[in-house]
Length: 529
Image (cartoon, rainbow, N blue to C red; front, side):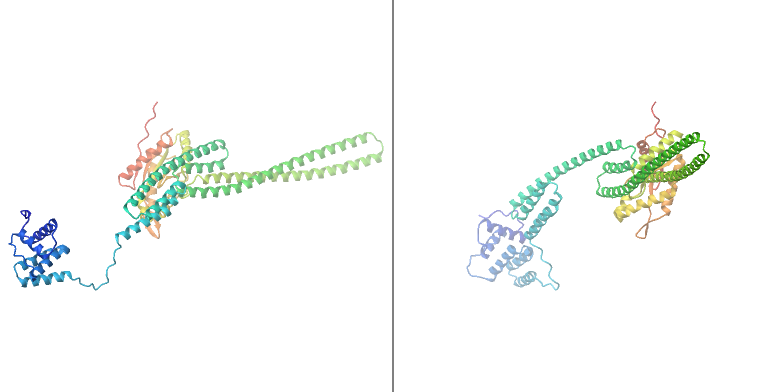
């Protein structure tokens, strides 16, 4: 009994051919031309011809149509057209369809070089496994040298991926890799906690040492630098720069300290000699006085003129000797005094150099402006002076516009050079009493003592104009640098953080309203009674 064919478009030879192949498979019939033709006619409703075992051209062509439908689905339309021509016994059309099919089946040779043959999927998978294994061995394992257990796991997983030849072994390797990720994440969290704990311990140590060394200004400067580096983000570049600067300062200060010790030793020796000479002089005077007393007694005890003459000659001789000794002692004392004065002057000079060395660690190593420690010192000094004399003290927070875009487009070295250029122009334009300090990144603080708010705005605006006139050069190319600024008038008794916060908020207003602008901060809120 034939299967229902009401869902098949009998007018579409392609659908009829597909249904014929389906029924051949369902009935488990051999895909011979006769079976194909029988089923095809059954589905299409064409009466079945009496079976014949004699081969004919029609049966051969029908078999060709079946093979085309089986092995060349993309030629289904041409095969169906050939099938229709065979059924209509239109041999001229059949010949034409055969010619077209043959042309489609024959591959035309390419004149150009054949394209490169893509690697089989198995080769691609092997390449990926090997790449992943090398990444784990030479990349991940080396970065986990601080954790030998995790490094060993990474190497073992690399071997597992290299030997994964089936889906099951590959899944096992992926599971191990996932566990490694979890271990690395936990290890990273522990490492971060350890670093933060060590930073806090080192900060406490530095602060406690600093409390014991209030009068030792040269060491105070070094401790301030170490404290600043520890308190900030632990960037390798800033650590290396701080190490370099600190080594340089330590070397110079050691040389100065050595000279100071020598000068101190020389002064002590000079003072010792001075006291010794003075003692000798006093002893000589005592001896002279004793001789004079003896001669006086001899004078009182004789009446002989000849003896008196000898005593007189002896007195004159003793006096001459005493005068010579006194003159020589006086010259020696003057010399020792001059030597002591020179040694004292040398000590004062060396102490001044030590103070200067200490000031070096208050500077930002890149730009030469004050660093955060120097900024805090100067702010405290100027704020105290302003409160003491009831003078006006303004500050300005300035931030370079589009600095990230400059870094991304031209590189970080160009960005650093731009910061140096800004500070150089600022030092030329600002007054001697003003200070510029780097707060971090591309943000700076300008301190303007004895300056009202209007005057501070004029100074910062003038600095903006000078910066646009004095072009920054990058590889002989002029690059325009601008900045946005916020200016605040410090209120009497107002702390550093509060003043900077108000100026910083005004700077952000300048950023949001077009950049390359100067905005003023509102007055500080009145202190509560």
